[in-house]
Length: 226
Ligand code: CTP
Ligand code: MG
Picture 1 (spheres, rainbow, N blue to C red):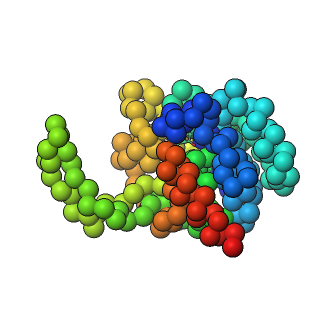
Picture 2: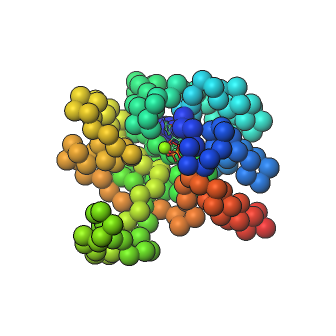
């Protein structure tokens, strides 16, 4: 299975002066934990890291320090996540049939989750990892509630997300043509009226976005390592 790791953000909401994926988490840069999970998965055979030029030197040092056995490719990122994934898709070998896309910032995803996701692509063209929403969600306009969607139908989207490569390329092309701006790849599939299935994600598979997330991630990792 091919894996693309979007890692070309700046981590604005983390409030740090550099890419949050370079921040320390229990003695390793955040990105290292993501790479170690991909390395430990049984199904991933090819890893593409999508990054900004300013981070190449540090990304390459991380990869060297981990002594990974799987081939690693470095791909130039874009100005949005959508553009970064688009670039990643162009960099896949031409015979790639399926791809998993997993945010570098979700550094707690387990190897088992990667493998469950790879397996899902044997029986569908598109899926996302997701978990049932725990909170009651309100739709709000101008400071007042508009509606309360039925929680049993609400799922929180995670990555990995996986797709047929030719179909996802087509959806990205259509998205560019029509100016669709989306925050995940499933949204492009949806816009093209293609089915996206749900694979049970992991409650601990959080996206490190703010300093609080970093503290929670550290707590979860400590528990795991004990
Ligand atoms: N990402 C990317 N290319 C971009 C923007 C984001 O590859 N132009 C990646 C990030 O590196 C991250 C993932 O997409 O692994 C999810 O994005 P997010 O959590 O929003 O990270 P940032 O964009 O770095 O953070 P922020 O939005 O707070 O600036
Ligand atoms: Mg972002």
